[in-house]
Image (cartoon, rainbow, N blue to C red; front, side, top):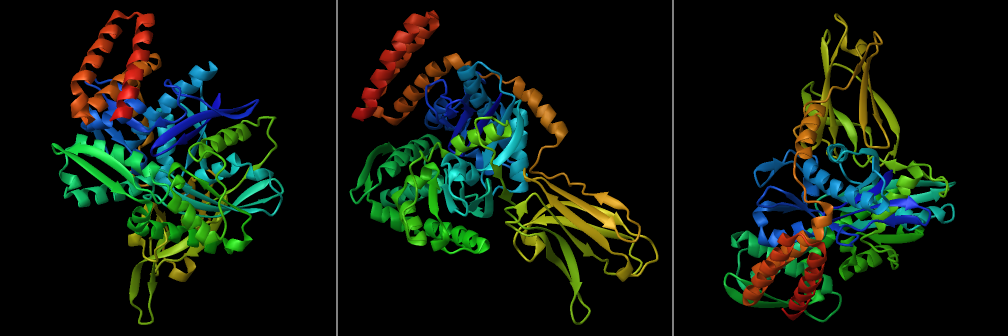
Length: 563
């Protein structure tokens, strides 16, 4: 079975295209959104989702979130007795989603279409594929999140010549893409974005404002208290939708604290982030060679797009109100399900051709002689320019600097700077040259080919001999080798994960422990409830456990409303 997956920074979703269209599957708690959080308990068991999110407050050193931002890097996070790379943490989320899909359908999941930010780099895309492999599935396609959102809105059914701007602000990343529809083809004209701009950054603004007003240093707060503060301010952020103030009360550093903020002040504090959002929008429009009046619709997706200040920015920039009638948290996942249906050639779907663009410029490092004969090195020579429609193949011819040169070193870079030192090196190849030849007679044709899945191939041909050489990538410290993937896959299979049918109990206990951590005045009561529920679990009587779970959950709901 093939599924569509939105592997998000803050939440992830899974679904399938079926007889009634795209359908999202609930997790063990009955929720469509699974928090992208991983935790490890005292027994070394892995916990994923809402329970792990609650443990960010009660067990901050054993829990981690927002690791999507580290994809494509070698960063490791120690949880319990072992360290996890971002691919492995993402694989644990994927495994949880796959279990939910299999529980909902009774079928085994073997393939998936996974959405990624349009501005994800080559390394980040490869890391996402590795996460799928570590989760035990084959990733049939990576679909850019704005393209998935376009499918969710049914934009492929609009009239030919329609142009759309997809504005995607998620928990950790921001993308904008310009699309056009013609003859059953959804073509992406341009994409731009910021992989380190999302709802988490707006939350950071609130944390800084709160701590500034309260005379606190966030870096000096205990991890558990900082987790409490972020959770409470996230709730406050969601309630900021008008001129009225939103308030929070919380005990930090042994002192009860009250704080309030209105939407106007929040907007002023967020102005630097708003300006960061403007630049990618303007660049995408410029690359697409379009004016705002030439767009048919503007679509807002991503949970963070709910903030009123985001809608105001879009309205000012494009001169009209955006479309927001599809749940912004679900739009990308629904589109990934449709893309999975298209990939599986579901007969209920009219064939739609989805094109995408290369989000970054790809090229090589060159040296040139100036007017005085001095050699200037470290220059970037673009071969495939950003926002070229993929699949794309381009070539350029390069010559050695010296006569009788025996080797031409070709380094491959990704980026937009004219100097390679500010771009990202992807690999290199050493091309042997025929001996005893003048530089002008020893050219090498370098061809780059970039496919629909964001995979780059480089081929160098020596013009004098016709000899061909393919790119040999360096061991990138941000990527796992095939051997490492196999080793880590075996290690992940040995990790103990709580059974899906126990998730409700685990999540309830994690929620209770979080409330115990947050609310000093209710600790005795919550501790008593936890002890009683643990006793019912030890009976292994499912009827008794289910009854106690219902009472326990209701009591926690009432307590949280009172506090």
